[in-house]
Length: 194
Image (cartoon, rainbow, N blue to C red; front, side):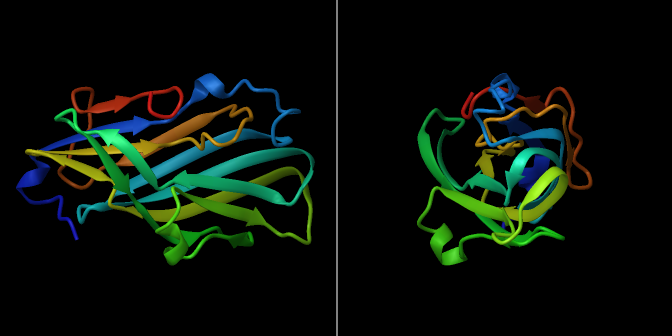
């Protein structure tokens, strides 16, 4: 387990990627037949080196569907602070979706895939109109360490949905003693990797 409270925590840089609002104007009739009227993400960074995510969606289905899919990229390449390309595999666990049936790959299957694909909904029941979803999970092995800094990158908005997101809100809760501000917190929007 990585402890962020030791000397490494002197400098904590926060990078939030993937708000991807540039691609939110794709036609809904062509897309998944729903609109996300509201989306909230609440991220709680734990000093032991993992973080918890709670996502809340207010979805309006324009046609009957069984539910939604949530896809989280778990294996990706990135350029480290030294300019070297590296591979990163994160682990998603403690998945909860209160009030909804869901299906997600086992830990074993996660090891061999580049993404975690969660199917949310009842295969024997259709939904239409407004439906609220809350998705909770823990993320491990997502921090990047460089000298005396810890960097955190996370795609806040699901970029796998070619539909409108009308409102997007997020909050990042840093560990006690860590101050986030304009000198150590950056937010980017655009396609994945922007």
